[in-house]
Image (cartoon, rainbow, N blue to C red; front, side, top):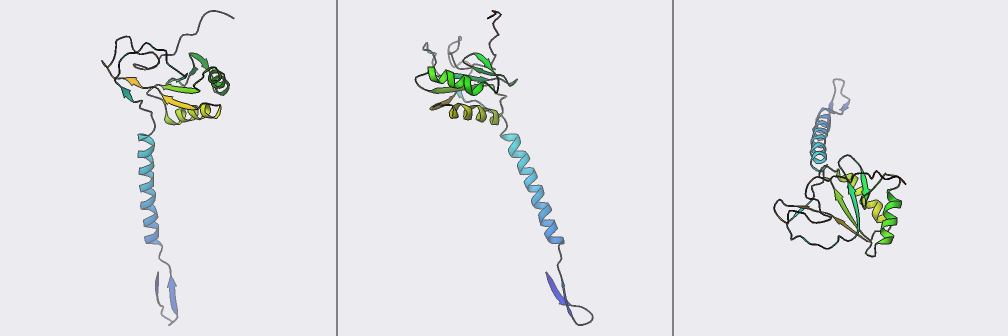
Length: 162
């Protein structure tokens, strides 16, 4: 802010807002770029890879699968968004460990995964796990049950009627 005197001898006080405007525009550009980078880098879930021996034991817990085309499966049964809490709650009541295992496609958005796991936690899951994908050549050719060895392929709907 510049204070000086004008021609008639009085005090001249004006605020020069040009530097302030420049600073705001630079900050706006910085935040726009930072937001774009943050959103782009944190959008997809990269499942961890594991290299382990094949086991024959049945996987524990309730398996919740989420596919790239936004289909949800609870223990191989397809459910929709509205029936998801009830389906998970029914499956958890049958499981003594109260464990929910999330198995998602690599193209799954992080927010979708967090939303599904939050639903599981609110309906009574005491433990939550994320299924991992196998490293190529890391285990037996048949693959380990409950652990995806590639993109998730949902089960085919049965043709049997009720």
